[in-house]
Every structure is written in structure tokens, then in C-alpha cells.
Amino acid sequence: MPKGIPQKKYSGEFKIKVVETMRAEHLSCPEAAKRFGVQSKTQVARWERIYLEEGKEALLLERRGRACAASGTQKGRKPKLDKQVEEDLIAENQRLRMEIDYLKKLRALVLEEERQNKKHK
Picture 1: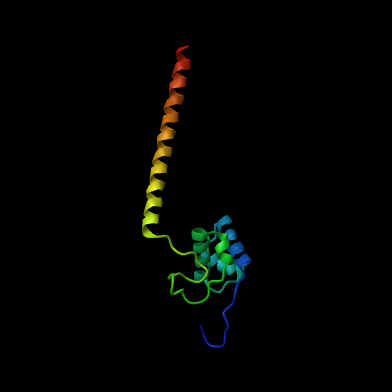
Picture 2: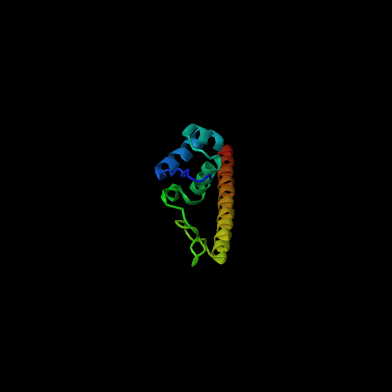
């Protein structure tokens, strides 16, 4: 950024409006940047990533400044999960998906059996 030109600061509400409009109307980052007068399409892409990963409340947080030396996280961001906790959550997610698939197949079999019983009566 050239000297003497201050960076434009956008409010959290504005960022949320840009991202939600972008997603509702299926706009690309450059289209949304142009429509809302944001100078950088990468900034809009960054807002969208934060919105998807951390929720719209995360766009309301101030993120300027250096990373925290103690936790290694950026100012305003939630600390990352421990590797073991993350692996456990992934494993549980997979197990639950398999359980859902099993229950769907079981339900389909039960419904098919009920239909067969109705035909024979």
C-alpha cells in the first residue's frame, strides 16, 4: 500500500452483508467487490473464508495486529484444536455418518417388507 493512503476499514455488519449477498445471489468475489465498492477481491474472499469457517460472528471481531506469541493464534481468532481432539472428532463424525447410512438402509428394508406384506394380503 502506498504511503499516505490509509486503509479503508469496513464494519462487521458490512462484511456480513457482502458475504450473505454474495452467497444468496451466487456472486463471485470480484463481482461482489465491484458491487459493494470494496477495493480488493481477495479481501472479499478472506471474509467469505472466515464466514464459512468460523461463522458470521467472527466477522465482527477486530483482526488487525500481530499473532499472539503465547498461543500462536491471530488476534481475535479462536485457538486451533489440539491434534488429538481434532482426530477424535473426525473419527466420531465418520462413525456417525456410517450409523446414519445404516439406519437409512434399515428403514428402506423395513418399508419394503411392509409393502410386500400388504401385497400378499
